[in-house]
Image 1: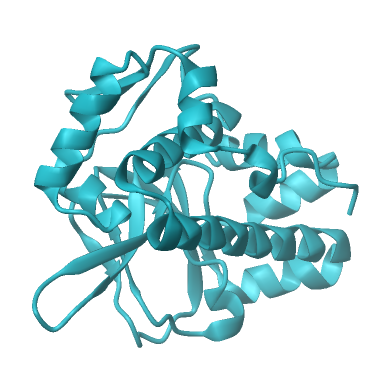
Image 2: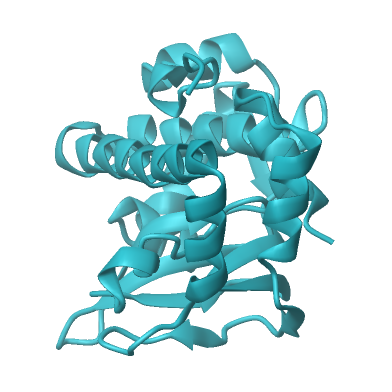
Length: 239
């Protein structure tokens, strides 16, 4: 039911059978949603958190002139709004980018898990801290990396995050979003993104076609992006 989330946890932490059972029991239902569905609106009071088990989701904010900035991409195994457990409402919207399968965890059940298994509370805290690490790296990209570097960096990041949960091949992964949606992640126009993707392709680094990313040379792509996966904390100390 939530195997992809457990796989993500096991990649970083040792989880006992009892802890896994408690996490599974915290889920009240599994629901499917179509693409482009807003699941959570800014300011909406929340009593549960949303775990993505299949598909792609994003967090975003709209500006008054109609522009949209995607502030985070969520891949299978991610809680899109675990932080709503303490915040109770979000300052941004959450929507599906593709058809998605969602596991719902009521906050009262998360509270019970945290009380019965304090170590899992620390692991949940680690998860929200990791979200903040990714946000900071995106901020660096938006503020200081040029268009090619920030595009290459995001493609590297997704390759690592999807690979962690078994959703990336040796040299490729599915990314079924439009160039416009990719541009909204990168703070660029879709025309600019099209040029950058052409430059990356012509340099023999990576191709993005028909919703699929094919990496031709990951080492060179990392160098072009100055990508260092340390901010993803793939080998954290034991909690």
